[in-house]
Length: 282
Image (tube, rainbow, N blue to C red; front, side):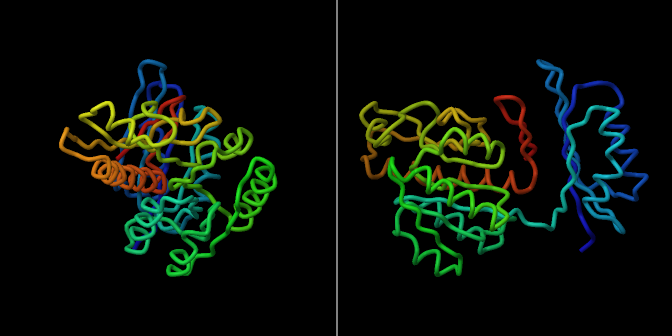
């Protein structure tokens, strides 16, 4: 396979951006395979993702060569090697459906990530981690131990060179400091459409209200609980015939689907932050 790279950039909109970017790529012998762009006219921001082939170079060399152009045009730009998988930490509590789904997709080659570690505040899934030969870290959390456990979590992130943290139904709230430190590189999955049915037993709440639609929301973690930029939402149509258990199963399927898509798109560098929103080049 020829080396492939991805360029993502955002900037204030102005004439000539596409011409300047494609001209740079042509000068470096690149063959464009996929290109997408979006102009947010509401705040005059331009977003672009280009995937291309190029030989006799690497992402760091391209980044350095592009630096003067990025400065001149005020581009927020980054180059990535498409063949380098994103190092991803999975976190889970006592509900393992999202963890199990992500592990299966990863093992099947459907997610462009590496999983160097799994962290949990319970021991329920250490055998699942072992079956995939992934190190499992048990970090039980109480109000008294939370600062120490987050310090250990930071050590794991640094030691394993983690680039993405996925809260695969991890039921502990991260501290505002840690949430800010992980801004743009931590994804959470939330039952239902935010901010509906927050708190415990969301599917019981949904059942009591007689909902006709349920679903899930995958979003970036921020220090505003469950208010981060939304990456993906999955919807399931339901009706009065579903029991609480059936509604829960449908909702959990939606959680798995939405989270897997969000992780995949992030790992493929298809998600760009746009203030409190995201631009997703699917």
